[in-house]
Amino acid sequence: MGGKAGNSENTRSGKRFEGTLFGRRKSRPLRKLQAEIHARLLPRLVIDIENAAPDELGDLFPGLKKAFCLEIGFGGGEYLAQRAISDPETGFIGCEPFINGMAKFLAKIDAEAISNIRVFDRDAGLLLSWLPDQSLTQVDLLYPDPWPKKRHLKRRFVNKENLEQIHRVLNKNGEFRFASDIDDYVQWTLDNVASHGGFSWEADLTDKKHVPWNGWFSTRYEKKAIREGRKPAYLVFRRK
Image 1 (cartoon, rainbow, N blue to C red):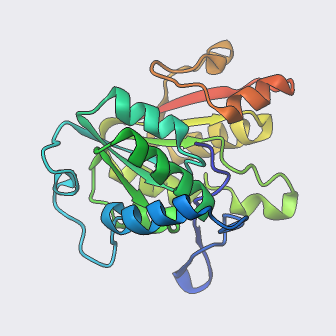
Image 2: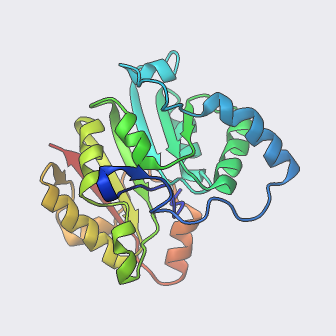
């Protein structure tokens, strides 16, 4: 989770171009076993947005009708895998364009025989635009790339357009959950969500924003942040 990737941007002429908000698609070559699992599982689990979206997301998860959640930019997928294992009646969608992260996650799915996950390996904005209205219970954005340089701020995933799409796909009282160890991005998110107006902040007291939500699984990104002296924030916004 917190893959520092998996984002989108709306650019000139109102058209959406992939790869404008996330960085590398791939780093080192995949190991032989990773490549084999990636080639075998990705075609089976990937969501094809070239087809029309189903009326019900349960069509993507045969037998599951309870709830459906999305994680944007899952990194190596450890958080998402733990959530799927702990809640087998919920359908989970993970978005990650970084090939090495996707390969690592697919290997985990294979090893643990996790059946309630689908994936998307392209721009998360494309997936959000495709998803049906009010189809998700939660959308998680965990430790996203902060794009700290001023000239790169427009690349941050939290922006007016993406918040509007998140608001659209969440069902009534659905949650948008955000975690980061970068104070500036935390404040940026609070400001942008407040400006949107379609969400209520579940913990409006400053001290509570540093308390993880129920069901949180600690990750390597969180541990690194704490080890380096940064205090993570965990924000939960409920759709009005």
